[in-house]
Length: 216
Length: 231
Image (cartoon, rainbow over all chains, first blue to last red; front, side):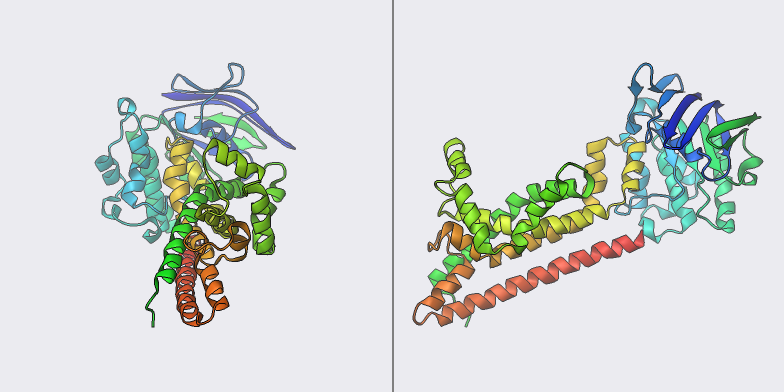
């Protein structure tokens, strides 16, 4: 499985260009804030429309300005983990986890509740309300919720930035474990590379709206 | 003391019927307007919002007069509705419900709009990336999260219709059993000798209903603010 992106989006005084491909495993998108990292993720997720170009994931065209293809976010099967967990406050942890699972098609479903919950160590939280969880627990539930929608790729937008150091160390082993188990591309946006350097399969530097270096 | 006479019970029954119908009919309209005002940008938006809030500041007798000119027996809209759908508003309890709905709409829209604006749109975006279409996101995220405002708006609209006097009596007059709601009945009793007893009883009932509605709506609204702080 892999994702190919060759797309560009222009704002009033700023253009973000992304041309790269990422295979299974963790690809770190590294760069200072304001460089355009999140913009790239948003183009892939379908929450921001590129000005031109194409995005292909796993053989399926998600966006192509020439062919006039622009799949809606809910048709892309792209799991998105945000800086804040964004759990649904009116649903229990269990129903948060099952939100995308219930909407996923059986034919393409690969993640099952019991297994993912155990993998992320959140079995004991199932009946709780999101507001009663710690920041680290919330983010683990958010990761589980995204994976349970059986996405063809995972986008992580500085998933640890709102957590303190101890919490970061609590989450990192889970992300590493997931990476080992899921055979899908994970795009991991960060402005502190050491965070993931030792288990990233590839590192892309993003600067001034351009993906600059490609090191493996 | 609260031993109601048939004429008083008629007024109570009518007020409840008018209140429930005006509330039920304005719920979908009020929510659609509140959603548009909270989320959409469109030309003449402030004009539309001004028209909705107008009955709040306009003398009720003017609102009743406008309703009479539009929906009365000789009004353009009234004639059209009578011929096409067979709905008559003039001098009927349905007209009382319409007047109450128009007078309650600003309160309803305001409460709903606030709670729709309080919904974190990033949660809707998260739902979309999890595979939810627009409508599914609306029914499973937006609507449940704005429910407190919907309930508060419905309560306020019902309470407003219980107190509506000026627009109703101007539009559909004062007909016992048809348009004589509690406030109009109180007014009528006070005009007739020996009517103080019934008037006071109905007044006490009005105070009780209004208090329950306001306390209830405030309680619901406090829950919205509490939820907002948790986020």
